[in-house]
Image (cartoon, rainbow, N blue to C red; front, side, top):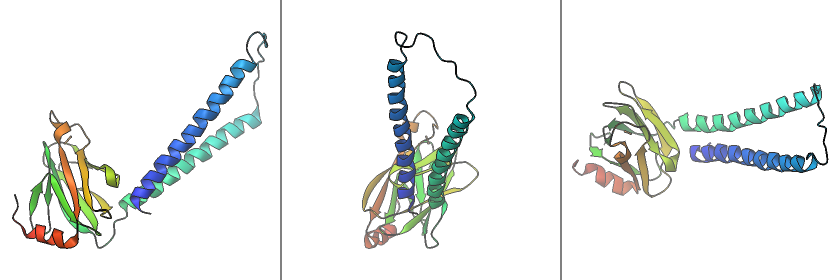
Length: 198
Ligand code: CUA
């Protein structure tokens, strides 16, 4: 499944179920508060041991929790299932910017340019402390760890500019560790790739 759709589906499913329970439990609670108020029900009933009820309130939440896991797992598989023809770009985090290294050794800071219509694999590492690479528009959030390489991928299916953030506190200027993802038509990307680094 397309990871963006998968993550959104998991998000809305969990929010939706939570909202139904919020409203359902809230309504029943208010109803019981009124129905069993002291003036109408001075002696409370003490109910113990109802096996059927206990089975139901164990089974239903278990099934709901498992369906939440399942939608989340499907989305996660999409985020990990790398297409074979992906364009690979190296990403290095450092206090306080993101560096991008392209197949022809071109290097950019704070700007990731990719061609429209291609799958992009990002090999992510850190050159100092822990950072976390985050592109909200593509639902990607992966730790950037010194001494190891993690990865993320996305399908560049929209032209335009998108935010890249560091989402793990990495020092005093963490909040300014931002970059831009620019998705441009392929010809523009190829021309850009041949320009000198800056
Ligand atoms: Cu790098 Cu926060």
